[in-house]
Length: 263
Image 1: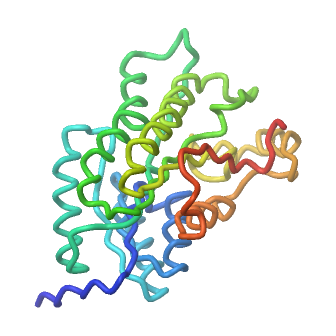
Image 2: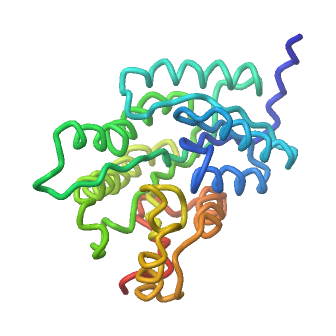
């Protein structure tokens, strides 16, 4: 039996890519705490996505998980169609309010070692996929909406352990430039576009090196003004706050959340 679509009463809806774990999940939960409903995406682990949906629903919010491989550019049009159908079936709406481009992955390699396959993989996920996903979803975004592109503090500094991240960091740098251009172009619709650049965060990203390697963790702490590596709880609430109306006059900015790394 199909339930009746919900009537749009000004309810805010956010799409968070990679929202099943790490920074993405924390962002989704932080938005739910602020009364926002969610569409989250996951790449392959449906169980993690279902657990994230349950955590959001426990707060009394509505959430839906959709599979997405953001680096598969040819699938993005189909994803937009699934978003359109989900908005109508779940909320009785044809639009959404916030987009957080968080999904990502890493393939390490020094400049002399990285393969063209790895280069294209990182480009498709962190730059080309972000560009064309936004292009596909813009017709569904409300005027006055918000876009956050998750970048990296590695666009500002190079740590001893990140010398094999040249391609990854370069793609994030491209996204920061794209953020400014999009802020200019979409300003006529009242849409703000900003980049959030987390520092080293304790997650499973990159094989969990910051979280699980004590030597790396201590090194990061020693070069951070606040004296420790970051947690997802340091990033998710910050992104949620940036999406709120209190920050409606902030656009085209790169905002680093690193606890003061390498000041």
